[in-house]
Amino acid sequence: MKKIFISSILLLALSLGSRAQDMYYAQTLSRNNYYGTARSMALGGAMTALGGDLGSIAVNPAGSAVAGYGQFTITPGLLFAGSNTSYSADGSDNYGSPFKTNRTKFNLPNIGLVMVFDAYDSSWLNWATVGIVANTTNSFLNYTTGRGTNSSTSFLGSLAAGARGMAFADMPRDLSAGFAANQFGEFGPAGSRNYVGSNERLDPTERYHYLPATIDQAAMYNTYGSKTDLAFNFGFNVQDCFYFGFNLGTPLLNYHRQDVFTESSGGNSGAFPVIFTYENQDRTIAYETTNYLNSSNTYSLNTSGAGINARFGFIALPTKNLRVGAAIQTPTLYTIKEEWVYSASSSYENSKFDGSARSSIGQASYNLRTPYVVDAGVAYTVPGLGLLSLDYELMDYSVMKYSDTEVYSYFDTANWARENIVNRTFCGVSHSLRAGIEAKPLPELSLRAGYSFVTNPEKYWTDASGARVTAETVQFRGDTSVIAQDLISSSYYKDVTHAFSLGAGYSSPGSFFADIAVRLTKYPVTYYSPYYYGAYDALDKDGRSLGVGAPVEKIEHNVIDLLLTFGWRF
Image 1: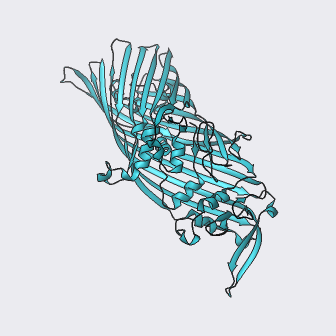
Image 2 (image 1 turned 60 degrees about the vertical axis):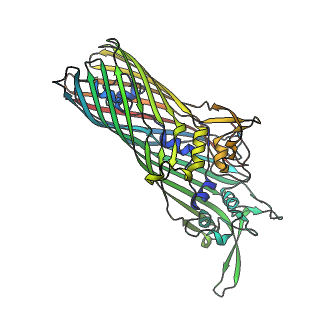
Image 3 (image 1 turned 90 degrees about the horizontal axis):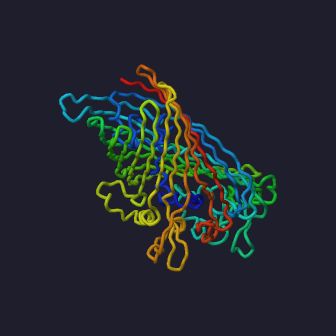
């Protein structure tokens, strides 16, 4: 997915009380990337028509009724996230050499228990199942670092530009990121309601500010956390040829984001003089000049949420070997809670001017409705030899909706009108295809392989004048009036997420079984802009706003998952 994350101006807006929730954020919290057991992951998640595995319950609740025995499974895992980040100082295609970043994380993507109850008194029902299963449906692990030099713009300059037009006395002293920055000299006043960054100089006409020399810059964009569906499952076996079931789901999510941006004079501090003004003990005004060394600005966001949904599904056997299945999940209604904080620090040759500041903790709570999900699958099994399975999944992101947390306000979304209009206009459906194959060279041994891909649900439009209208430009400018104009046709972005998996399983003659799987997920290239500067109508090759002269990072992101499932039948 090619998109640019808004950072520095967003930080200033956040600190002044504006919301950060937008279409991209809703997509991030809504996406599914199924984990489950090692067997289900090794088969590419193509479990809709198969069942018999506690990982399959996340896709089709009827899967719990396929096996005629109870199960307990636990699946520890490791995530290896790697990113190659290339830095462009001016937002052009002239990227430098990529900088590699790797992170490893332990997780527990599956734990569950299902019990079977025979229906002795029923002429049509063989048995029923009851279970509670937790399956991870997405991981947010991604650490990136980009480095480069810049001779045109600076982060401190972007803060100064963002504060332009605001009187210093009017800046909120408890929340303002701008106050945290200028409190110790990251930017300062330059005329009436105008500001200049501490590593910049002001044009003699006082119309613009600029860098007097090249600076070193580094931008880190880190996310981690996960989304896990806790399902209370009920399944039913009808004469071993039809299975149906449903889940009452309580998804839990936690998402953490940290943006860190540093810049320094790079050993050339003499090119960056800064004049500090302060009051002596006798209340006379004194001026002192020192040189800028470096600065650091950090934004941290912690998000947690709990939701509720329901999923219904069936599996049917038209013949002994052919299986078909389908499932549908209602939209999830989340209650989201957030906390964020902004901090800044700077250093100068005269250390008495060094300083650091931290904003108050910002808080927000709101509801988010995520897409509904439809799954369909077909599988062909040969008992004792193997199987082939194929799934299709559709998610409709256009139904995403923000609302306030008060119960009465769920249907009254006036406070979120802009965000919800963007969701409906620029989001559509995402398609996913999953395939898996399993072979049994020995009765106790299974070998597996899988593949899946997921398409991007984001759309862009062409208006009556032939211009491209995107969510990026509409959201950044905060003006949805362009949507009221004649939007003629829409197209989807072509970004696709691919995943490849391999695995093996051992089934003992007794109750114990074990599975292992490894999966490589290759995400589309993304673009991250740590700050914007000046005008905002410059576009990239996909018609998205770049800003003028702002740095852009090109991020190539892959994740390797390693799962090991231990299970017992009873």
